Structures are given as structure tokens and as C-alpha cells.
Length: 507
Image 1: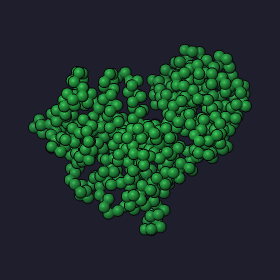
Image 2: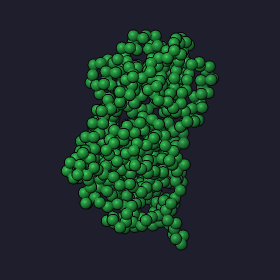
Image 3: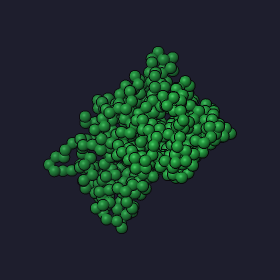
């Protein structure tokens, strides 16, 4: 599993999904290659690792330069093939990724020296003159260095060997998966919970640290990396049909794509605690989330405050970690105090099954989502939801190809008045809450169960494995008397073991 910025360091929907996948295949050995920003995050896991997760490797987007120091004042110099490959990636013209992969894995050199050297400078000059001649060159040069520093560091990451590489995004994870496939001739599966390129575009368009044409330069870089993952992947999954259409629009071949909805274990919520004596007289609104800007908790608080003015019985439970975006969480605490809002509870990390039965309905006011597990968990407890129209929230609430009816209320993002009205509407009608909750439960049972999701991924793992001569454990045991995936002799080399590799690699 190759994941960026999530498992096992951060609690959230994608992390929970990875954890669930690993636990659901106990007969398979998993290794995680986790992309994090800095070494200071190393080993700070938020999850208890399953027994079949045997190792966690780390790759860093910001790191010390561990390359060889230059000798006699000479900077890193590229041969003609390497220069052409580097030029192809900066100009995005028939990118020679294979040469790039070999250069960064086979040669030992300083990334800093490369970025400060004549070869990189000359290629940046050509790119500038052809495409951006009206902006300040020095600004453009430093922007290009800041764009390529994390990519080049990632490309130097030692790659653990696997029979199948499963990237839980495109981007940097997709680059590592594509490079691993190139060296080990293994299968590559890419699963997108949100469309990586679109999410980075949204972030950059809102960002204050980058302005003007430089937003486009950064966006082009993320598109380039995602295109590589789509090209090299054997299969590319998405959570819902609209996301699949976005993948096609970004260049993914249609025959590679497959919609694989999320699934949860309904049994986990079959016998959960209900309302407690202290809940008497309250209408509990539950928000299961990380307190982070992407969840737009501030809009939720404001909308709740306005709704509570008309219905004092309302109580808001914000259930999830408050320590991952501490500055934003503090701003949320201050907002509650400044607005003098009563009955807003920040629980911190909790077991959602201990609280969900006490809720009357759930709420999610995110500005970006994929297919939120928190909505499905609410449905398992027969709780309707108020959610913003992002990701697949519309499909979860209104259904995709079923006639079960609405399981909640959909609103526009950051629309305080509309969200407050939805809170008031559900709060005033227990009959409406019951009807919508039953609808959500039926929709979950029909399409979004964990067993259904696991069967889908088992089919993907088996089909990709067969393509590369790798057998699923049950099949390997039947055919070979073994217990693990069998490797073909042609694949039996390791780029971390120079003596066994088919090229030289200084260690």
C-alpha cells in the first residue's frame, strides 16, 4: 500500500479504509510505504497496526539532502540521455519516466546540486523562454526548484518489493507505484477516494502562498504526475460514477476504470447504545470528523447557532480529533465562545459506535469529500444526514439508480442559512428523521456493505496478480503447497540488492 498524508499517522476516512482493507485480508502480507512531509512525523502512528501489516516504510517530501557530496567543486552532471529525460519532464513533452526512474534510483547524487546546477538551469531557461517570458525569471526559477525538490526526493526513495502495488491516490503515491512497477514488473492498482488532481487544483486556487500564473505551473505538475499513474496502472478505481468520469477527462483509459463504492461493517452498529438519561429533552446532532479546515467546522458552528436560536433543544456533538490542525481547532473553540453558543460538545477521539446511537441525525459541512464513511456509519445506525453537495454526498442521500427516497438533506457548501434551515427541519419532525433514517439503512444494505467492497478488491487483487504470474494465497496453496503469492523467476531481483539486480546500483 502506498499512501500520502494519511495512514497510519492520521485518523480519517481514507486511513480507516486502508486499515479495513488490510484487516480484511489476514492471509495476505501487507507493507505500507507512507509519504509524509517530514522525518519529525516518523513512527507517530494513530492506529494499532494489524498483524499482517509487517513493515511501514516512509518517504519524505521535505528532507535533508542525503545525496553524495560533490567533489572538487563540481556539481552533478547529467549524460545526454539523462538531460533529455529531465528536459522532457520539465517541458512535459513525451516524458521519459523510465530514464528518470533509473537515474534517481541508480545514481547517487545530491538533489540540491542538481537543482542548483547548470543542467537544471538551462532547461528552466528554455521552459521560461518558450512559455513564460513575461514573468520575472528569478521568481520562475525558484518556483521550479520548489516544485521539483519534493518530486526528486521522492524519486530517490528506496522501494520495498511487493507482488502488487496499491496506490491510494495518484500524485506522489502514483509516481512511487509507477516506479516500483517499472523495476519489479509487478501489478499496479490505483484507488482514488477523491480525484487527486482536482483536489490539488482547488487547494491551489484558494491558496495565498502562490499567486497568478504560478498556480497554473503547480497545477500542471500535479496533472503530470496523475497522468503517469493512469498510464502505468493496470486498474484505476473510483468511488462513484461522476469521479470515474473525471478520471476519464484527465486522461485515464476507460478500460482501466472501475467504480468500487466504500463499504462498512453493519454488524458493528447492530447493538449500539441508544439515548442516555442525560439526553432527555435534547435533539442531538452528531458530526463525526477531524476538526480541520476541509471539514468547514466554522460554518457548521454558525449554522447550528442560528438554528438553536429557534430550537433551544438542539445540542451539537463534534466527535473526532482536535489535535491534527491545532490552530484551526482553537479558532473553532474561540468561535463558540464569541458567539456564546451553548450545547456544543467537542469530544475528541471517540469510538463512534459508543455515541452514534444517541444522535437524532448527523451533519457534514465539508468543502471537499469523496464518499464519506461517516455518512454510511450514520445510515448503519438509521440516522439521516445533512451534508454539503461535495463528492458523492448527493448520491448517498438521493441514491444512484434506486428509488428508495432521500436519506437526508443536501445543502450548498458554506451556506450558513441553508444549513441552519436543514437543521431546523430535521429537528422539528421525528417522523421525517425516522423515514429518512430507514431509507439510509436500506441504501447501505443494498450497495455499501463491507463484504461487498472486500469481494470487489479480492477480485481486483486476483485478476492483477494473474496478469503478472502471482497467485492469491488460496490458489498458491492449492497449486504449490505454499501459503503466499508465488513469484516468477523473471521477477526475482531487488533494486536494494545490487548483486541480484540487472543493473549496477551503488549502495
